[in-house]
Length: 241
Ligand SMILES: C[S@@+](CC[C@H](N)C(=O)[O-])C[C@H]1O[C@@H](n2cnc3c(N)ncnc32)[C@H](O)[C@@H]1O
Image (cartoon, rainbow, N blue to C red; front, side):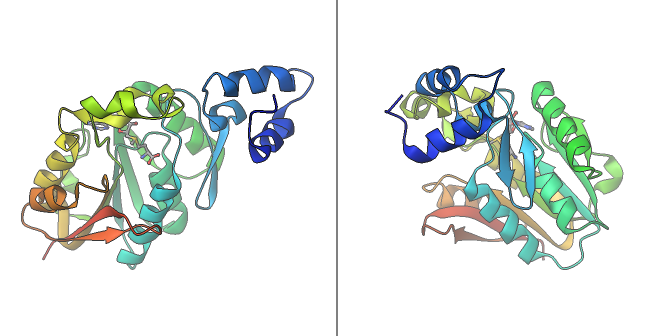
């Protein structure tokens, strides 16, 4: 029990109770379960979201993407979140821009069940749809979207086994994109211009060594790579002229 860092112990003590002994929770954490799965919640921007093994735990880097996205647009009417997982970006953006219509997609029915539970939990009205990237969106959105936000999978298949044990407990399809890791980012870059209105913005989280490839994958948009708070290249920002 003494092996967990004090801040983790404090968080487990806070959720232990008559139905969940501290010993049981510590054993789960020591066996590699993400802390947030044990707690059942994760903070994301202005929200506290329900999370479990069906979704990636929202990360601080993605809160950075959310802040960046919110700064890139003034009064968006139409927002799309691709690869929504727990619904983190979509719900936080809806909270920030209550007048916007927000659509969010994911290929995982399990993840969408969590996203819909978070919609109920937060009372924020986002339309969640099942399918590949832009496929489930209404055709009427083509050329109309003010902001596309995405935190897609971007790990290469060969890198998966090198990830920390607790990260490997998260859904593999949320992490691994394919042999290079760039597969999903490239498909987003390929199609974003079709869905954005002139002046519309794509913001996409990327791996720190993917900036050059991600930039060259966007078609018909002006792109730059932005750094996170630790100075790593982590965000692709692209604007439709
Ligand atoms: C890195 S997680 C991001 C989850 C959430 N947006 C966040 O930032 O916490 C990626 C999500 O993309 C989904 N996904 C993977 N491939 C996809 C695709 N081709 N189209 C839509 N969603 C996809 C996964 O199921 C997973 O929920």
